[in-house]
Length: 220
Image 1: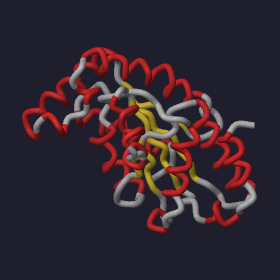
Image 2: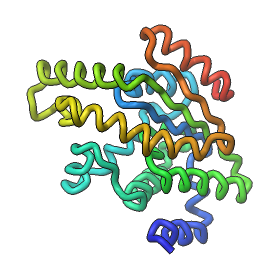
Image 3: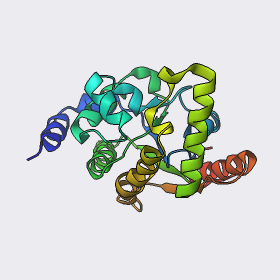
């Protein structure tokens, strides 16, 4: 049994863990440069969720974690899941919250399904939805590099993500997303309400796609 399986088995014995989980969760994912940051507040406002998202990468703050993230690598499932599940216990999220950046790997998708089924088994009526923003590889690369250039001009090098400056890292980040994250998300399609949004259009076009998705998911 893996360490992740052991962790989930221990949690399964704790009914209070499940009662503290928000019943309404939007699991927001997106290709690098697809506009998660731009669209998150729009989703929150229209779905009546907590005023800020849980950005999973912001929960992973140790130097070792940051070094891996800066290289475009993914952390162990157990480490990431523990950090997120602990954060979800905070009562400020009771009405519901957007989770930005989870799941990213197969094991993390397993955790989302495990949590969903655990809530259902306890008659807690979970409302889970997955929203994924997608752009092509070339669009993603251009947007990431442009974001890096703007950040350099505005804030100085120390504030700029390494993955927004190096073309090789930028392209690798997209490939990692498609291989690991998008593949993991597909494991949940058909099990949890799931919408993929084309985020390659104009600002207004993408906003409309997001609004349509929220209607489809019955979140408004």
